[in-house]
Structure formats: C-alpha cells, structure tokens
Length: 162
Image (cartoon, rainbow, N blue to C red):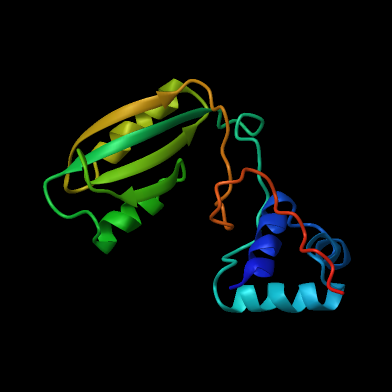
C-alpha cells in the first residue's frame, strides 16, 4: 500500500459515494486508475465494506454505553461470540486485557432498555459481572487514520509530475 492508496482510503472514509472521476481528481489519478486501485484494495481486504453512517439518536438508539464484562473463563469461544451477536443492541464486542475480559458497546433507545440489555449480558454463560459506563455526549468519532501522520483531515493530492 503506497501513499496514493492511503489518500484514496482517506477520501473514501470522508465520502464513499464519490464518483471515481472525483476520487481520482482528489488524489491525482484518472477515474480508471482510481477505480482499479479501489478494486485491488477491496480484493486485498483493506476495504472490508462500504456502509452508511446513521445517526443513532435519529433512529431511536440514542443511549450508548460501554460495558466491561468480567468472566470466570476465556470469553473468546464461539458460544460467547454467538451469544453476543444474538443481542442486536450489542454493536461492538472486543476481547481486552485489563480489568475485564470483554469490552462491549451497546446502543439502546432508553435507559430501561439498557438495563434489560445488561441483564441479558449477565445471563451469558461464563459472565461473572459487568461494569457499565453510560455516554452522556460524544465529542467526535473519527475514522481510522490511514496516513499514519496524525493529521486530522484528508491528505492533499500529490504534486503533478512534470
């Protein structure tokens, strides 16, 4: 993966609906070359999927919480994964090192629904406890920095060759 691929990824993270002509122009390529590079990035698994960023509050999932899940045994087994995947309010689940075994991100419409979700999490075999952090407000959520330079915005296109 080179700098142009990284610029393409950054552009796509900002707006994945761009036409290949606009995408190519933004990074200094033709539409065809941009299309071919994006195709290769998909084939290589760099681009896992293309999705839409939906505002959770607008669709009735305004309560967000992070739940530390404590367990008496290793939680990476497939029954645990399947049990978590069966809960639609669980939008992320991560095996972690630290004070718990798993970190789970939950989105619900109300705090009452969050409480019901916590009961369902606690009922999963092997779970011995939970600690919940309710998010009051999110300042921002940013996409992965594919450039690795710490800059917040999309990269500048390369200088035209002479």
